[in-house]
Image (cartoon, rainbow, N blue to C red; front, top):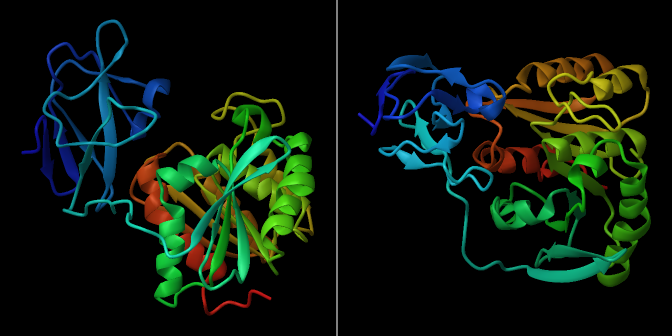
Length: 321
């Protein structure tokens, strides 16, 4: 028994708390498809799954599970609880001091955080939604640990933050100009050039990373996309109904990045679009690693995939010239 949730192998028996009128979770895409509840119910998950969940009260407001197994530590949903099956707990974010140095730079009026590895960079990685990847996901800690273990080349990480991510990360030419004409030159001017660039993002940031790789493969030959919001068009706002424009563009183009790391959670609504995009990459003959994790559209999924993605793009067994 885990609070109001009983775990039986891959199955959960969920007992809603008093006052709950609906269940919301990764599997409902949270507020987009709440499940009405009137009593206990069961849910089957993949083996080793990690689920974040909550409830809605009679006013339609989110309410936490008062006897939750554990907090979700979700920066978007402080009311979310977490439960896992098979005894497999998600990884904790790493901590402690870094050997490398962190710099604060400015480019085009925006602030950048740049992590510089102690050995000097063999490649640079532009990270979209950079503040969250730096503070929540601890990407610099993961990259440094992989280098110290000999699994990855030393990486410079350039953490970039949007001003309006809904607009900028949907095929925005102004963002491309900012990154290409301001961020990359400012980094090279302050810290020196790196021989190879990659770009990394999650959700809408993953969409934007894949778009940048398609439009500018000579600049970003390596791309990582975690749970990319592939249902999107320029100016669109409905990530569940818009066409999969980027998949169509990749299918039609003979250009694109040389290597892609593509990841998605099996409990999120973007699973089917990600699988279709992976099939496009296979048909194109693009070098890629496609990975699915038994969790949802959240930072736990993306933290879980950090080491995999970095090694898939910049592993010490890969050519980074």
